[in-house]
Length: 114
Image 1 (tube, rainbow, N blue to C red):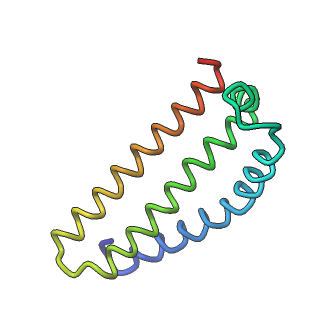
Image 2 (cartoon, one colour):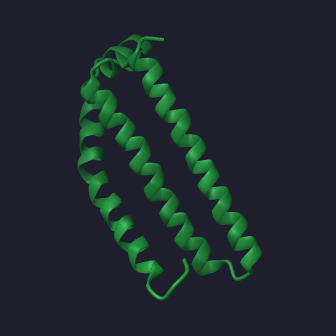
Protein backbone atom coordinates (compact mmCIF):
# COMPACT_ATOMS: atom_id res chain seq x y z
CA UNK A 1 0.00 0.00 0.00
CA UNK A 2 1.22 3.47 -0.73
CA UNK A 3 0.62 6.58 1.30
CA UNK A 4 0.49 7.08 5.03
CA UNK A 5 -2.90 5.48 5.66
CA UNK A 6 -3.22 2.95 2.81
CA UNK A 7 -3.35 0.07 5.26
CA UNK A 8 -6.38 1.50 7.07
CA UNK A 9 -8.67 0.91 4.07
CA UNK A 10 -7.23 -2.59 3.63
CA UNK A 11 -7.87 -3.29 7.33
CA UNK A 12 -11.52 -2.22 7.13
CA UNK A 13 -12.22 -4.11 3.90
CA UNK A 14 -10.77 -7.24 5.48
CA UNK A 15 -13.02 -6.78 8.53
CA UNK A 16 -16.11 -6.12 6.38
CA UNK A 17 -15.51 -9.23 4.29
CA UNK A 18 -15.09 -11.24 7.51
CA UNK A 19 -18.41 -9.91 8.82
CA UNK A 20 -20.11 -10.66 5.48
CA UNK A 21 -18.78 -14.21 5.58
CA UNK A 22 -20.48 -14.97 8.90
CA UNK A 23 -24.08 -15.12 7.60
CA UNK A 24 -22.92 -16.46 4.23
CA UNK A 25 -21.08 -19.35 5.87
CA UNK A 26 -24.02 -20.13 8.15
CA UNK A 27 -26.38 -20.11 5.14
CA UNK A 28 -23.98 -22.33 3.15
CA UNK A 29 -23.56 -24.90 5.94
CA UNK A 30 -27.29 -25.21 6.63
CA UNK A 31 -28.16 -25.26 2.92
CA UNK A 32 -25.69 -27.99 2.06
CA UNK A 33 -26.66 -29.99 5.14
CA UNK A 34 -30.31 -29.84 4.06
CA UNK A 35 -29.59 -31.47 0.69
CA UNK A 36 -30.77 -35.08 0.65
CA UNK A 37 -27.55 -36.16 -1.04
CA UNK A 38 -24.68 -34.49 -2.88
CA UNK A 39 -25.60 -35.66 -6.36
CA UNK A 40 -25.17 -33.56 -9.49
CA UNK A 41 -28.94 -33.50 -9.98
CA UNK A 42 -29.63 -32.30 -6.42
CA UNK A 43 -26.91 -29.66 -6.58
CA UNK A 44 -28.19 -28.40 -9.95
CA UNK A 45 -31.75 -28.25 -8.60
CA UNK A 46 -30.54 -26.41 -5.51
CA UNK A 47 -28.59 -23.90 -7.59
CA UNK A 48 -31.48 -23.40 -10.02
CA UNK A 49 -32.95 -21.09 -7.39
CA UNK A 50 -31.73 -17.55 -8.14
CA UNK A 51 -31.47 -16.92 -4.38
CA UNK A 52 -29.17 -19.90 -3.80
CA UNK A 53 -27.10 -19.20 -6.91
CA UNK A 54 -26.64 -15.56 -5.91
CA UNK A 55 -25.61 -16.39 -2.35
CA UNK A 56 -23.26 -19.12 -3.61
CA UNK A 57 -21.58 -16.60 -5.93
CA UNK A 58 -21.25 -14.23 -2.97
CA UNK A 59 -19.69 -17.01 -0.84
CA UNK A 60 -17.14 -17.67 -3.57
CA UNK A 61 -16.37 -14.03 -4.35
CA UNK A 62 -16.29 -12.67 -0.80
CA UNK A 63 -14.46 -15.73 0.53
CA UNK A 64 -11.72 -15.62 -2.08
CA UNK A 65 -11.35 -11.85 -1.77
CA UNK A 66 -11.07 -12.13 2.02
CA UNK A 67 -8.48 -14.87 1.65
CA UNK A 68 -6.53 -12.81 -0.88
CA UNK A 69 -6.47 -9.86 1.51
CA UNK A 70 -5.19 -12.05 4.34
CA UNK A 71 -2.46 -13.61 2.20
CA UNK A 72 -1.44 -10.15 1.01
CA UNK A 73 -0.99 -9.00 4.61
CA UNK A 74 1.12 -12.08 5.35
CA UNK A 75 3.29 -11.39 2.29
CA UNK A 76 3.69 -7.73 3.23
CA UNK A 77 4.63 -8.60 6.81
CA UNK A 78 6.97 -11.54 6.24
CA UNK A 79 8.60 -11.24 2.81
CA UNK A 80 11.46 -8.78 3.17
CA UNK A 81 12.63 -8.75 -0.45
CA UNK A 82 10.49 -6.23 -2.36
CA UNK A 83 10.57 -8.10 -5.68
CA UNK A 84 9.58 -11.42 -4.11
CA UNK A 85 6.82 -9.67 -2.16
CA UNK A 86 5.39 -8.00 -5.29
CA UNK A 87 5.55 -11.27 -7.25
CA UNK A 88 3.88 -13.16 -4.41
CA UNK A 89 1.07 -10.61 -4.08
CA UNK A 90 0.55 -10.59 -7.86
CA UNK A 91 0.45 -14.40 -7.94
CA UNK A 92 -2.03 -14.56 -5.05
CA UNK A 93 -4.22 -11.95 -6.76
CA UNK A 94 -4.19 -13.78 -10.10
CA UNK A 95 -4.84 -17.21 -8.54
CA UNK A 96 -7.69 -15.79 -6.44
CA UNK A 97 -9.23 -14.16 -9.53
CA UNK A 98 -8.85 -17.39 -11.51
CA UNK A 99 -10.54 -19.44 -8.78
CA UNK A 100 -13.32 -16.84 -8.49
CA UNK A 101 -14.01 -16.97 -12.23
CA UNK A 102 -13.96 -20.79 -12.26
CA UNK A 103 -16.27 -20.94 -9.24
CA UNK A 104 -18.73 -18.38 -10.53
CA UNK A 105 -18.88 -19.92 -14.01
CA UNK A 106 -19.42 -23.33 -12.40
CA UNK A 107 -22.31 -22.00 -10.29
CA UNK A 108 -23.86 -20.36 -13.35
CA UNK A 109 -23.51 -23.53 -15.46
CA UNK A 110 -25.12 -25.62 -12.74
CA UNK A 111 -27.86 -23.06 -12.11
CA UNK A 112 -28.77 -22.87 -15.80
CA UNK A 113 -28.71 -26.64 -16.15
CA UNK A 114 -25.70 -26.98 -18.44
